[in-house]
Every structure is written in C-alpha cells, then in structure tokens.
Image (cartoon, rainbow, N blue to C red):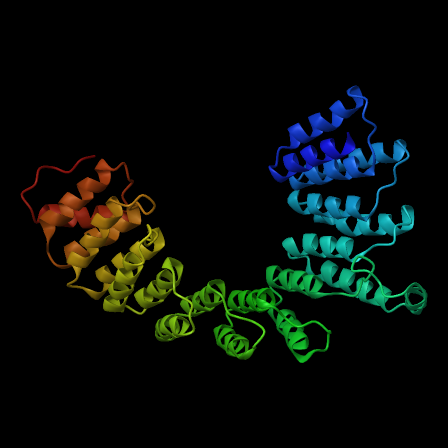
Length: 400
C-alpha cells in the first residue's frame, strides 16, 4: 500500500539511494497502487537528498498532471535539493512560485529550508531578504486577525522567525564573510530584541565568523560572554574555534593558556586543540612548547595522533631554532610509522636542513636518499642541501 511504499522510498532517500527510490516509485503503478501526495513528497525528498533537483522538478510536474497539488513539504524538499545540487539561483524563484503560482501559504518550515539553502552558499543578502519577508508576513494585521479568530497558531502556522531562522542567517553571514552583521545579530539575540535567545550553535557560528575575519580579540570577548550565559554550555567546537582564531593570529601564549582554561571548565582538549596550539607555538619558534603539546596528543590514547601539518610545524620549528636536529629526526621517524601523517617532501626537506646546519652531513645524505626511496620528489632546498652535504662526505655519487 501507499504507506509501505512511502516508508521504503524514505529509507532509500536517507541512504542516498536515488535510483532505488525512483524504481520503487515507478513500480507502484505496475503493482496497482495509486500514488498520492505522501508518496510523491517521499520520492521528491529522496531525490533532493541526493541533490537531483531536476528530477524533483519533473516529479512535481507529474504531481500536477495527476491532479495532486504540491505543498509546503514538496517545496521544502526542493530547497534542500537546490542546496545539495548547488543551484541557489532558483531558491527565490521557487519561493515566488509557491505563493504566486500555486497559491501556497508559505509556512515556517519552507521559509527556513529556503534560508538554510541560501546560507549554505553564503548568499547572505538573499537570505536576509527572505527573513525580512517572513517577519513582515508574520506582522501582517490581516494575518493576525485571522489567527486571533482561529485561536493560537500551530508551530507549522507560526511564521515568526525563530531560532532555526536566525541560526541559518548567522550561517549565511559566516559563509558570506559578514562578521559585522553576524556580531550585530548575536547582540540583538542576547539583548532579547528578537524574542529568541541564542543557543550554542548561534555562539559557535558567530565565533567562526569572527575567526574568519581575523578578529581574534572578539572571539575571546564572545567566549567570555558565552561562559557567563547560564542557558548555554561551551563545547569542544567552541574552544577549538577560538584556538583556531588564536593560531591564525600567532597568539601562542593565549592559545596555550586557553588549553588549560577549557580543561578547568570541564572540556578536555582533543588532538585538534593541541594541534592548533602547536601551529601557533611553531611560528613563535617555541620548540619545547611544541614538544610538550605533542606529548599531550600522544597521551590522549585511542589512536589520537598529530596530523601532517602539526608534524611539519614541529619539524620546521626544530630546523629553525638550530641544534635540535635530533628532535626533527625523531618526528620524521614517528611520521614514517603513522597511518595518517606520512612524511612528504616538506618534512624531509626541513629535516635535511636541520642536519646540515649541525654539520651532520652523512645523516643529511642518508635522509635525502630515504626520501627518494619513498618516491618523494625533492624540493630545491632539499637538493641543494644534499649537494652541500655530499661534498663533505666520501659517499658515492648522488643518484640522478
């Protein structure tokens, strides 16, 4: 029956099995099962989950030919399809079609789906226009009189912008590099001007916008306010976003302090947290700090390990400070045993440079040849260092 088919089609959509969903839908006719709005909406949602918005539009045309009118659920799925298919230019067109062509009274779910689609591509101006339209409609006196006569609106009927709406708008500002607008929106939410209080997603999106804008001092201010908000609890993502901002701004001392602060707040740093602090400390040439944080990552257990960028940052730092080639070699040896951070040409080049600085010529030559044995193309710096080291050794002629 319809329920069985709709359930199966929905399951295919969740598993991103578009062809299977369409095959089930087409089989309904041969099985003598009449398709209705529920089954059409199920298959539209399934193909949209896979980003096939064109197939969804064709299915919507079939719906109309069978005398079944598309509704808010149909268009909400289409907005998801446009987002997944990266065709955001059709979002506003579809919203207009909903009300002007099909006479559908757009509900909050459809509005939020449209805003979310626009936000995914950083289309903040279009997203802001939809929010304004949503807000204006919710304040329409005729709508308010009709709502008063029918009793309190259901969640689906209430089209006042809510937390989902404003978080989607924050995402649009974050993706669209509109840090100032994101900051102002969060401030209005905190002040109660929008009748919606921010949640942890709101704060995290604003932190991300500040990080992207290089406003690392503002990330600390937002974090301070967040930690004072009794209704919201900072997460690991919260602290890692701030750490990322500090790393980009070369604020290694503040990053180091934040690691211990987050622990005191009951949030344990992970490999990403320590890795970000290592990147900042490396650029400040604080090798001992890098190595201490490296040990913290290994102590996490559970397979936690530095990634390629972190290992390379430690090696680069060791090569730059001098007299620490042993630490550079040790990091390289660890990388060779790693499943996820195998050394690249940069890794070898910096180790060779560190060895050359300490006149460890034979070790430099051996490391260069090891790089070739791993099918890595030498950098110009590595080749020149190898040539220099070779002249100071009695090794055989270098390989081509």
